[in-house]
Amino acid sequence: MPTPAEDLDLKTVRKALQAHRDHTRDRVAALAKRPELGSAQGFGKRIGDGTTEAISRLTEIGVGQSLESTLARTERALSKLDDGSYGTCDACGQPIAPARLHAMPDSVMCLACAASERRGQPPRRR
Ligand SMILES: [Zn+2]
Image (cartoon, rainbow, N blue to C red; front, side, top):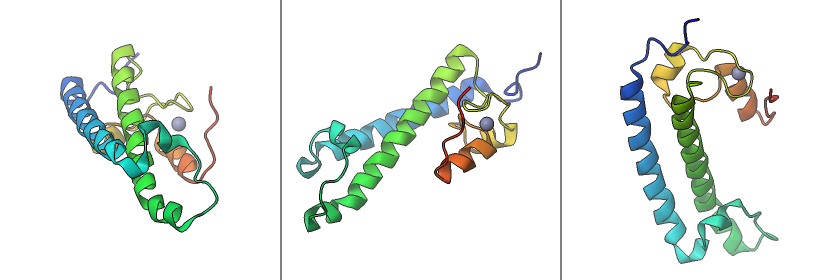
């Protein structure tokens, strides 16, 4: 059975993903070092009761969260390369369109599942 990723140069993909992961990790680390943001674990906390200070932090915390989710997705894509499931949607198990993988090598979900996640409806897990 042909794999959906067979047209991709997986070595190149892996290199690009590793470079992307390292770069993102550096940015997360740099952001986490900022004293006003506290530790990296603070990213997952809910903002408290809306002090002006907290509101002014929202943007930076949002950046941190999106960096962390980028990092998590990149690491997931790398582990999918390792276990041979690269190119298969994490949510529905269908092949991810090669064009999508070419455009976004860190895709771990197909277009439909990624779109439904963006709308705030987590795709159903297998
Ligand atoms: Zn899917």
